[in-house]
Amino acid sequence: MKDEDAGMDDALSPGAIKSIKRQVCYYLCDSNLVRDDFLQTKIGEDSDGFVDLAVLCTFNRMKTFLKLGEDVKVGDAPASVCKSVGEILRDCEDIVVSEDGLRVKRKEPLGDVGELKKMIKARSLHVTPFPFDTKLETLEDFFRTKVPINSVQMLKKRGAFSGDIFLECKSIQAAQELIDMEIEYAGALLRKEFKGNWENGRGDRQKKMKEGKMVEEKAKKGGNRPEPETIPGCLVRFEFLKDAPESVNQKGIRAALTEAGFHTKWVVYVA
Image (cartoon, rainbow, N blue to C red; front, side, top):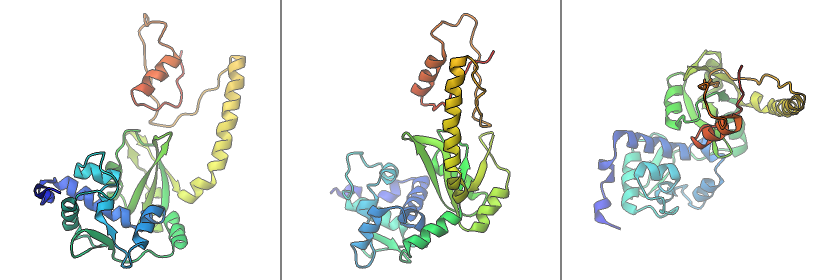
């Protein structure tokens, strides 16, 4: 351990300090802990409910904020870094920092997990669509200007952001207020519904998707391809020159977009 690592908080930008506070508070909040068996176990190992900052500081997002190397393993954050983070967290309302500044805990112990899950679900929304390159902090800041919120969970498909989120509001009333708002994001009108309703309708959506694929395959064989369903704000039209090479085809276009980091649902030619 090197002495020059001490006082690290002085080298962090105000934005990084804000992100560190927000992230540690999220790790220890109801929204995350009810789903995080690893952290629940770590907290349970200490009679006073503390968890080592050496563990929290080596989680992926914290390593980014603290500029720690990717090779730093869980629990191996330098003590000087942990102490700096501990000092940053001392003014957080919902967190208690140990006297030595190396451990943190919730001010209030975690309640019954089953009941908490029900309460969280009741005040959570499914919201879509968002651009695939949207950042978590951007979404959090955006929705905090609308209603009081607890957390944003970005949903993934095949390892990449799907354009959907679960948004947990502070209360059911705040969630309903948000549903009643007409909100645009990046030019697209957001669709919002309670998480429970969205989950209940997932089976029907999957069934329709399966039926749609079957109809599409059948139509392909008959040469009558149906018009695909579109999501407002997610459709892009390209125009190609008349002398475009033959290699510019549906398969090639989709492959190029995927390679560039864009996740496409379908590509069709328009007459």
